[in-house]
Image (tube, rainbow, N blue to C red; front, top):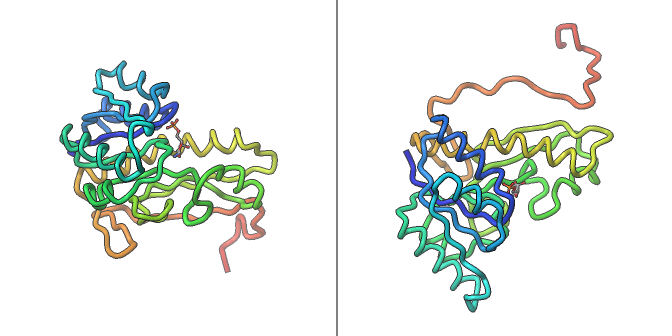
Length: 223
Ligand code: GRF
C-alpha cells in the first residue's frame, strides 16, 4: 500500500481512473491529497466528490519555480505522501521536489517515449507518420519526460486519425495502465537498475504487432 499525492491542472480523467481503481480495490494505494496549480481545474471537483482533501498552489504566489516546488514538497510531506503522481500537471518539476521525492515521482505521457517528449505529441505522432503510438508511465528525473520507464501501452495510428481520435484511443489506455503502475509500486514489486525498471514476478510479455496488418505470412508458419 502506498500513500499518494496527485498533482493536476485540468480535467482529471486520469485522477478519476485512479480513484475508481482504488475504490474497486484493484490499486493498492490511498490518495492523501490532490493539489492543483489552477483554481479552475475540474480535477478538484472530482476529488471533492470522493471526499479527498484538495489544495491549490498558484504560481503567482512564488518568486521562482524552485520556491514553488519547495512549498509543494512541504505540503505533500505534511499530508504523509510517499509517492507523487503527476496526472496532467502542466509544470516542470525542479530540484526541491526531485530531492524531497527521489524516484518517488511518476508521470504519464501520451506517447511511446523516448519518441515525442514534450507537448502536442499526438499531433506530432500523426504528422510524423508513425504506425503506432501509445502512452508511457515513467519515473520523473531532471529532464523532460526522460526518466526510467515503468510501463507502456501501444495503440495503432489509423490512416484517418485526427488528433482527437488518436488522443481518445491513447487516453483509454492511460486510464488502464496508470493505476496498474501505482499498484506495482504499492505492492513493492518494482526495482530500478540503471534505466531499467524490473517488475518482480511479472508475466512474460508476448506477441508482436504490425500496422498495417498485411503480413504475407498471416496464416503460415513464420520462416
Ligand atoms: C493526459 O493525456 C496525460 O497523458 C497528460 O495530460 C493529460 C491529462 O489528462 N500528461 P487528464 O487531466 O488526466 O484528463
